[in-house]
Image 1 (cartoon, rainbow, N blue to C red):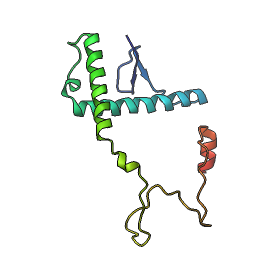
Image 2 (image 1 turned 30 degrees about the vertical axis):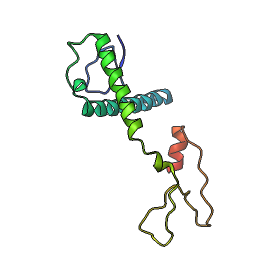
Image 3 (image 1 turned 45 degrees about the vertical axis):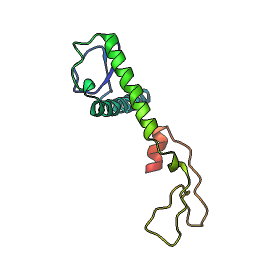
Image 4 (image 1 turned 90 degrees about the vertical axis):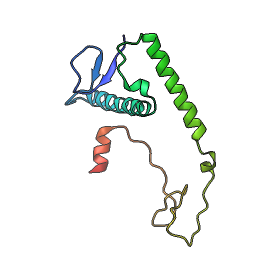
Length: 136
């Protein structure tokens, strides 16, 4: 048996890991942030798989656990093969835009500041207190 990321609409079962509704401590806030992010990622993946393969849309109650594992692994492998096959390797080439044509966006260029110098990337901020001070 495993644990499943869930939101508040699911029943209170020990196998469902739900987010903390009103996190107070920094530890609870961090847990809630990670849990919600991972849950959304899993939901997005299942949405893609369900749109592509009908076998995943139906109920899983009649399948054996090993058969379910094989079905999911097969769908994941096929999905990765399709994504790799459809990947456009030519898109990696730098697009040279015409400076006279302002209708086309400039791709792969670093944003420029008012002085004409490129902006330097800022470090990733993970602390919520620092983030709220930056926003204010």
